[in-house]
Image (cartoon, one colour):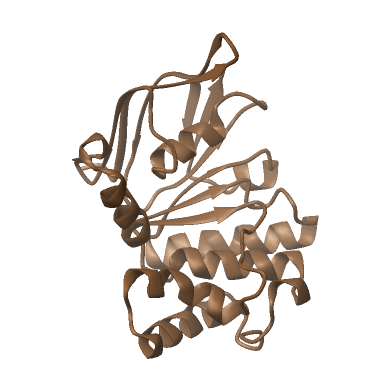
Length: 227
């Protein structure tokens, strides 16, 4: 059974009186443990596809299933619970809570899930150590570099042991050396823990490291390659 399957997935946006198609019928299967890049020109539908898979947005038509469960069957509360328990997110702008330190930011999904503070703190510390930030638990985002903030975001994405991590342009705001480090970290997590990653990117170095790439043009899959 695939981890993710989309069938005839379409998404339209209303822009004034015009209906703008962002996705025009996308059929995609992602198996557990894959490391997949979605790429294409600006406006091709990359972020829209990731937002739909991550249940941040809803399709205009078509279906998405996660481990065989049709997401159309979930209400808002069900989707929120699914996101918290099964999907981790990494954003290009990091989306960290500025008044929380690194440890508190990583603890947050566990606390929302209902874990006790001690257990959440222990799991968050383990994930931060795993991404190389054992000396930065007490640092707030404004005292961290861009690469360190992205590592906090990755630790936060992984702390609930999700089935899937969705990363939207995870290296877009990073310099070349930091980008390379983040790419290596994500690839290592994929290889060592079989964590499934789907990400959008313009970064050719990231495309060179993936196991499969999916190219979108004008809201359609134009090409798929397996390496």
